[in-house]
Length: 352
Ligand code: SF4
Figure 1 (cartoon, rainbow, N blue to C red):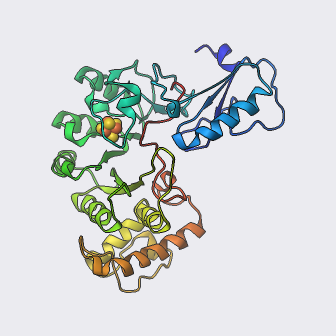
Figure 2 (figure 1 turned 60 degrees about the horizontal axis):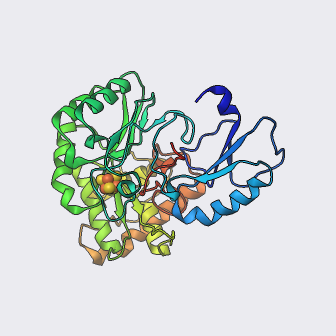
């Protein structure tokens, strides 16, 4: 897009996430003072989450009072995303190099919205948000790694499909200035593939995270606890993502508390260390004077010990919340709903 035409458009987002652009032409929510701005020809409202659609309609009405050409779209409206413009609907640095997916997981809209995997021109950026980069042709993946070699603190926030992970991917990733990468453990049948990928990479748990979907119909806190603990034992830092249906119904308080505990790396590390060694070592917890009371996180399947352990971690979590949300490296990904609100049904755009 030409700079000139870019200045004549406003982009409006239903809510702010860490990926939302923060330039002068980006706004969150309702129009404030100062509108209409001179020279603006079009307003694009982007709605990411399906449960924000009603709010999106209200935004449309409000913004139409100031500008004649206001458009409503985004992933929540099944936008297939034909192109990607860096900095337009995602902050500079985030990049999408492919759309669609080769799978159709029941809880995910990526393939249903965007169709089979297709590649896009590769823009510069250090945080890859593709639905399933590893499902792309090898040549495309190699070109993406080529672009990433010129970037610092590379992240794969979109997640890598451990079932498609191969030794050459591991080699290419090790050649990058890597901040962290993410796998997904949405289906326990992926466990062997995840273990294999972790061994291939041979990186520390601080660099390898794993999204763990939890709270879907039929799931229980005990079952989810076993899954996140398994991830930790495999060598990845688990990151709970609480399930929300299309209407955006939130899980109950117990689930939200549990989700908060399992999306804070420092807290997880502290609790796991305590369980393994009887006391916390030099982790953040002890630095802040958070003294354990002699109980740890329960062993997998040990539901008899689950409740006191959850209470312990819940208390530490509450202390950390009152301290602020800006300490741990990955804390920025969490939010008050517990777990991440990373859109599991596609990432933000209009089109991106
Ligand atoms: S969850 Fe991942 S692998 Fe499954 S359909 Fe969505 S993007 Fe594809």
